[in-house]
Image (cartoon, rainbow, N blue to C red; front, side, top):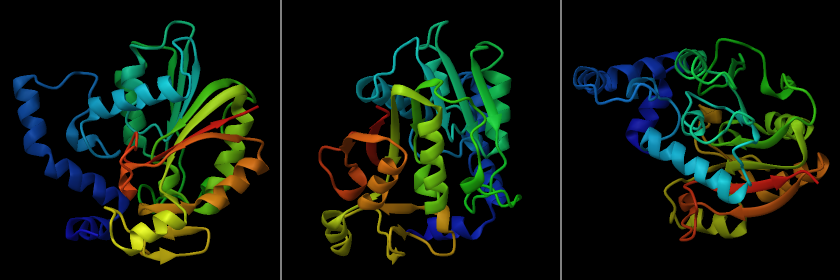
Length: 278
């Protein structure tokens, strides 16, 4: 783990957001002066989801949804952990008037930005702030994800997407979310979800340190990169997840192992799993 990552994890969740604003302040000021930043793209200092170019990464996720999860312009989609609109922005040019987008996130600043800059021009895009505890993003509440009931009716979404969400959640939380996904997704619907998956082959790769991410702390069904900030990076044993899929009536259609563990054929940095509801 890099020195900068260790230093970043020493900060509180709120201070991590402040640190990012400070780090990117010169760049954001220059973009404002020159008018280089598109109004549908948040300032770099506000972007707290993932790495890489905001627009390119959003388009990449949309491409994965179309190719592997059957997303159509008229689909109803639920974006769990929607962040600050990385996927929502390209979807504004993809979904038609029959389609709909719902997203929720635990970081209020991201949801506030989406409601200010996206929803006014696209009323079929709805964003909710859900105040849940997470030691990477939010420690100002004691409400846990394991008891959270998604605020949506049963069987209403054609597609559900979670990018780098279960990589920041504990097993009981993942169990509940998979239950909720099964509940709100229509029969025939598909879910695209990313993980750090662990099996015997990947464990061997990590033991040889042939991967950019190493999870040294094992707790049975899951592994952590950092014990002090548990939800910073969480990897899951595949057999554990398969048990949850079976438990809640979901079927794993495909798995595409990611570049993080050395896969030459990875479609993304993290592992991509496609689930369906028969």
